Length: 145
Length: 143
Image (cartoon, rainbow over all chains, first blue to last red; front, side, top):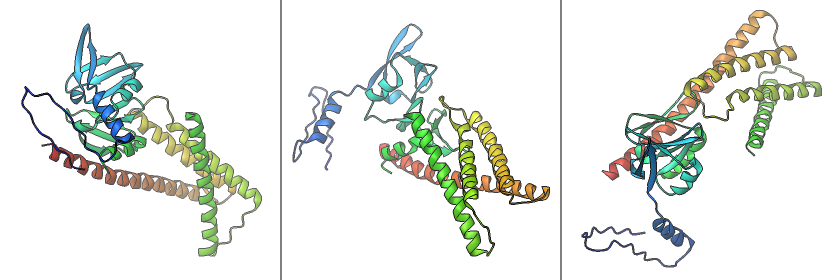
């Protein structure tokens, strides 16, 4: 499949044209995903509410029934449950790394095995996040391995 | 459903272990000419041992995500449980005699346990390298 990207001036309206042989389920779901794309999450810090772009989130973790977003050097609380966020950001660069963590693949610097039988993802901000063995195939699929 | 999959895994492990012990006994009889006679009573005992050995994996189950430190502690407990279970199994089946033989057996179990851990770690390292290569190529494409 050929992909054409064209940069246009600010005055023109952005558009996506899909040229396909047949409009099938796959095409429709891709279009739906693009239309419903919500790449902003609301993060709470004390009394303030912030709009956080998904690209800035390193990982999302559930701790004692609370959910937190971790950016490069800040932590925000979310009012949503982990599974709700997982559904919301489906198709983005996040994957479930353990029972309590969603990890942004694009923020992983490298992965190393641990003697405990799990994998440790070292992130660009030098934080380490555990990747359970059972979720490694999910990561590999995302990377096209 | 979650507990069902745990029970399923426990039974699969027990059956695999049982099959391994029986196959080893057959190989010993065939290859080394040692005549180990296995009666139906022994088969029941072997299956019971396989069940008990498989149950040692219970130490790794947890509702919460365990920290690295907690996993390491549980690995030590698991190793001790495997040692005790295997030695008790040998005692029940009356396969070795004398304190010295038991010490040698304990050392052999420890060596096999750590070889298995090392092999798992090596396989994981290979898998991690594959993932890292792909991560690097993605990053390179992005830049």
